[in-house]
Amino acid sequence: MLDWLRRKYAQLITSGAQLLLLLVGINLHSRDGWVSCLAAIALISFYAWISSLYRLRTLRNTPTSKIASAAQGYVELVGKGQPFCDPLLFSTLRRVPCLWCRYKIEQQEKNGWKIIDSGETDDSFILRDDTGECVVDPENAEIITQDYDQWQEDGCRYTEWKLIKGEILYVIGRFRTLGGSNQEFDLRVELNALLTEWKKSMPTLLARFDLNKDGELGIEEWELVRQAAKREVEKMKVDVLAQPSTHIISRSPDGQLFLISNLSGDRLSRRYMFWVWGHLMIFFGSLGGLGLMLQNVSL
Image 1 (spheres, rainbow, N blue to C red):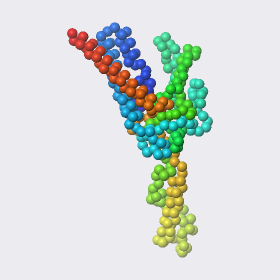
Image 2: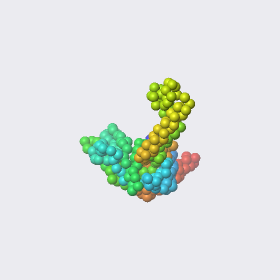
Image 3: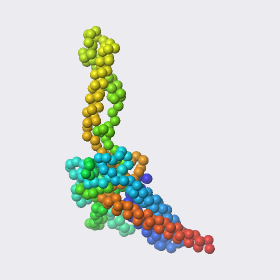
Image 4: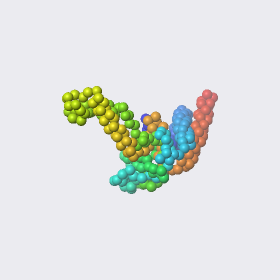
């Protein structure tokens, strides 16, 4: 449930829940109805205020890093979005080449619109800046995009959100590097594993290291085996560390904000600042109205 709230946050804060509750209160024509609606508005606004403030502080307190020099852990990156590989991903409804898309199909009914299908892609894509590139895994990300398309056809309403190839993207999340100098390589563990593997084929070991041909490996001959295995493991380490590094940014296991957007960091900050003050005003306004209602009840 909490993961769902985090991912859908961008939609929830603009969903007009408070306005809907206000209209419900008006239509109920009862004091108890108004009290319930105002209390619900206050709770929603308080949660939305906390969420907006958290996002605002996270964006402002996380400096932008370059991909090649980014520290392992929680970082903010900016670069151009590029496809991870061929074939290209196409949006579900418009069939437009894209990096990511979300869609929703609604059917018109007497009481409004009913969602009959929805979904989003989770294909990885590349973020590239002037120092390198990073794989972006968008699974469980909060995605805010200005590429929004909505139309109606045959009694249905179609809505699609996209991230397009070549756009400048802002990404904040958990950064890690696999392979290369960041690859973990335990010489002792690898040496023991190689010796265990070699001991499974004693005839081969005897053919290589039984120098006196007595059918057994003595202490000095076993030392030769260890030295040969050690040289083999050191060669394996050089080969492993020589492999190219792969940078990946994804959702952090501890639930920190994982945000992807084609809006700039400054625009996102201004957006969250607006919601911080907006939800705070709605919260205190609903509390004021609730106080007046309860005061009238006591009178």
